[in-house]
Length: 424
Image (cartoon, rainbow, N blue to C red):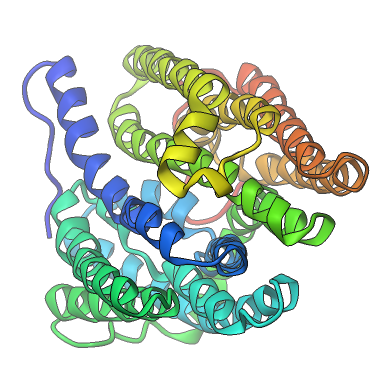
């Protein structure tokens, strides 16, 4: 499955990246959120809170399940010299990830049940599992091989079918648990179909235990970065479920969901810009890095405006007046949005390709510990607004650390050996 090279002017190439390599991965992630306005009106307040707790806990589990391939795997695939090498990289990633995903899915279901309102165990566990299964996503590979059609066929299409079927069932029965179950099934079917297409079999060829062990060692800092970053990124809703009453937690879930809509756009734009930047060298890379930062700054401004100004109205319109998000919490989410938007191109396009993943892991860990502590302490004192404020603190701290490390690395840095991390 060969790579698609950009043709034409740099502006045209960038436009194609943004339209192709960002839109389809965005749709794959956004489809469950598109259905949420319907589901929110069918769900009780407790079920709405449980569903969002499950999605947040599962999202953290999926980051663990990716084992760093979502961060370091894309540049490794992008810089591979042959289709055979790229397929082997995917096979190696799958066998590492599937073991972790199975364990993480089970644990996330138990955790979601424990912190959700009583009587909602089925909803909490099904959505936690559905979210955790995203650890076997192929989006990172599709970005690396410049083939957005893979996401269309094996992620967007199965989830579209599952979402359409689930909406009909939820409207008929009023039970949202079927949505979570169908999302789980869509991930498994899409992954199996992709394997048959790429490898001609349900499971890729076994790469060998020694290779997998070496990969885990090489991925450890990228794995830690993704896992720790996801911990504080997905901590607000579960923490709100602990420190606040179910009704307040349901309100906060609406804050978080509007924020997640925006974050999907950030991730999609980050995917599109990553390949475009990394294919350049020297001063061309520097120029593309500057363009990427400017584009992400525009997204940051738009996101801040939507969240801080229009967030309450949007959440009430989408999820119902009884589930409208808190206005002050939206202001803190807007600050967090700026932080994560501007740190994304620094990490993906500069620091990780320069094999600075160990340093990124260290400052991400520090920011995560400070952020979770701030969310817990401020949440205990000020409720859901305090949780949102603590979340903003963690994302701003991460951005400041990224800026510092980027200034030391430079905008035109070439990637180092992809076999193992440098000792830095």
